[in-house]
Image (cartoon, rainbow over all chains, first blue to last red; front, side, top):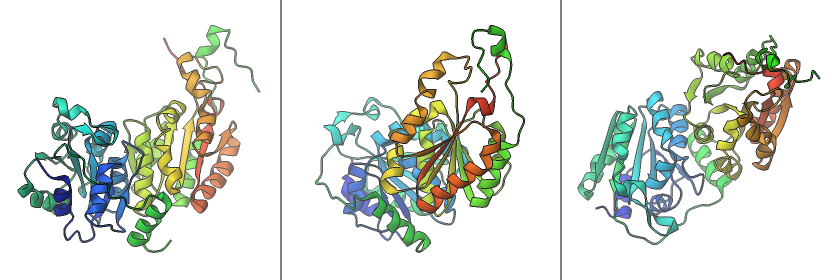
Length: 189
Length: 188
């Protein structure tokens, strides 16, 4: 089982021009803890929507790599988006699910993955090019390589420990998060 | 306004059809505005507009499994510097409510074209609960709404409303009434 903060930090080392969208709750805090960046789009709500934000971004910018870092709860709520992404086949999109098999923000109730619901198998059934589960920290480098160079769509389910870690709170003003991202990526508008 | 002859069973099988090019008028605005992504759930009322988008190499047409996926798509497109639009049926508006918070929180421009069900001689009562609150739901979710009953108004109203959305990062929805689209044709 992975230490979520250490794993995410390793994924985002030397991130270059990677574009990142994060799912509400702990995933947003993990990415913030790895280092705030103008090309992070932090979701604080809109549960179930992170993968589709990633698709819109990946379609708009095929010249850039897009990584979605989110939790199992957010991915399950937007599970149909795996099928939508599978139809569009964005080569530059990778989804990393930080899967602790629990709803951490609401008191650690078990999620569907706790009962064996298999997100990588679902992604493959939805025509993702690559999907796998990882649980050893040594695999972080491979996942990082996939995010930067692998042929998408990619889904990785990262089995992280069921632990609560201190919150690291990034920007919360949605307009500011959006405008900072757009300005950094596309120039002032 | 013509009265819906709901008491007459035969009338329910008569298509009230308006032959106009309103989907083409909307599509011309998509071009004028530089819309590059269009999300939709397949829909009879939007079938021509969807086909126009699918045939356009400059537009990524994204078939959604449920309408709220389209809200995330619009946000992602905007982050990447592209404009997007959503096509849905009135029932789909209900699916989007919480996801609309993304638009309002961040000030993403959003254009939604809604084909109405559950009004004007609707055959299927199961469409009525959502169809009758679609406008209110959109307004409560932060949208400006414009209802279109006449094909003659589509070009001007959609053009003006889209300009407001993209010039001001506003959320704008157009309700294409069942009278405009034509009643759903039921065959036995």
